Image (cartoon, rainbow, N blue to C red; front, top):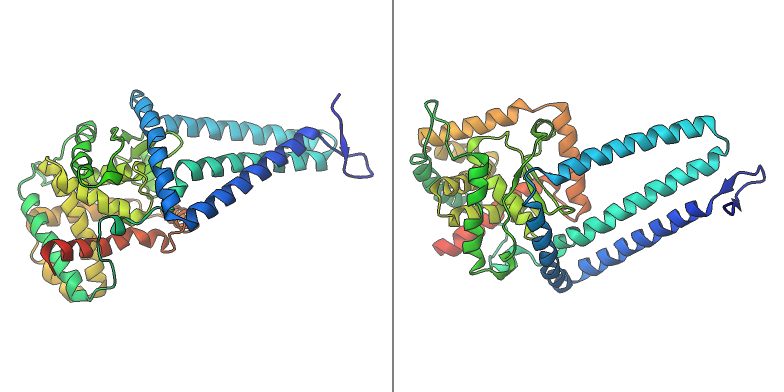
Length: 376
């Protein structure tokens, strides 16, 4: 018979197993906070730990690459099912059994322990990378506020490449870009990162192909184009997207697997890897997305200058821009607003104070790259 700890004169009791759960939860949360403080206080420590974790990711992603489906997706469904069963059982017990206070405390202990496990595992597998040395410092890019004329020049620079590649990529009868099948593109994405890693050691790691998510419709409704799951080291991409964006999205999620956590940096490295790829179709995706980010930023600041460049787009590029807008508008619903809010909160919790707007900060990195390569 288990020993009981009295918590009230009425005879309700707190089981040792409940105390144990609270103890484990407390230890895990303290470790999470302590490790977080260490990583936040020292980029050197975060960088060193990133190199260690790359070995873990190399092994884990290599094992997952032999599984044809997204393991994280299956685990998610199992977790949802287990959580649903747990809720039903605990609800029934709360209604039918005596000792409701003790059982209620037990439920709180379960939640605290599970959330502690998830939080600590996330921090140690990926969360630390938000505190690594910024890509701008590693690549010696001078990132600071620039006048709108520099944004215009950068956008015009990217437009030249986007126009060139838009006109040569294969297209169907309706003008949609034909960049290849999902698996075909995924198999070619490593080429760009392999090229970049020859100059940048921090990009040397695993290049396992990204995976196609089965529940793409759910991701579309909440506005998610891709996700990196650190618990399984899987880079997962939503295939329901504009054709010209798919390689770039794959490269973005691959960047996260290389311990690049910040969204603007993942976008920037996605552009660089696409540009370094030997396949012109993938190169186009990189130039297209980089141009789009800069064009949107320019148009929001100065519509007149934006329209000046819009009128210089070749018909093929305009077609891809229109297709992109249609895909975005298709899922512009309250459900997507909720998804954006959740994503915004997640980014801010992980020290990205701009939230979802951090996706647009890639423009600052692109301007810095333009100044460095063109000599401005």
